[in-house]
Length: 255
Image 1 (cartoon, rainbow, N blue to C red):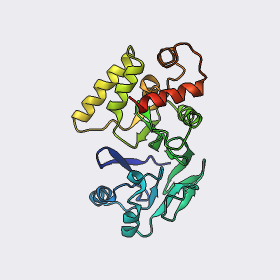
Image 2 (cartoon, helix red, strand yellow):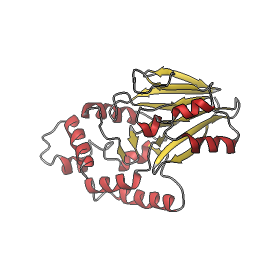
Image 3 (cartoon, rainbow, N blue to C red):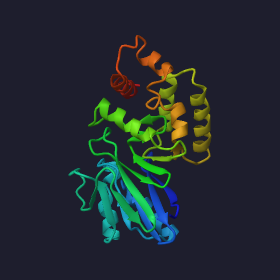
């Protein structure tokens, strides 16, 4: 199976869309579409068609400009989280485990509700396009899900191979690192990661993608069982794991 070529397309203040291209077939998929214009420009530069749009969730900054894409590419195939009626455009509904094909590239839907009730990530080769379900050094706010949903989703991501690349929905990494450092002030991996990310961004790059290996070292939502995290948020060790996850998310909300 051919490896996909990936183009990162920044838009708005801190959003990311992604183009997944299969060179053998010439087909291209777009992950999320909050603003189609920068995507259209990148497609034009690359001389690529647009054949599929993969939507991770219904929020306007991820799905609000899909109709513009459809207007310009009427034959484009839309894949959207199953049962989320807030995404009005017609398309295929992605249930957990469903697979879709983009030329020779296979795309698997992963249901990870927490940020919203219907959040869906897409697994392509050793890459996961996760929208707002996971951020580097953080995760999405619980708008509709529960702490138990978040715990389940984080554990599901942790099942991926350590070299799996995660393409996130926002450039939130530096602010997430500040929170992670407040939870684990003695974690040198977090301090080193902050320097690496700052260098990338200062050089005009992005912190996306990240890896499971990195996130295991710096992301407090992946480190909920680490003694250094427990000591900070539950010093008397009186909470269950799910309760700790909810408390950690609440601390981030109010950081």
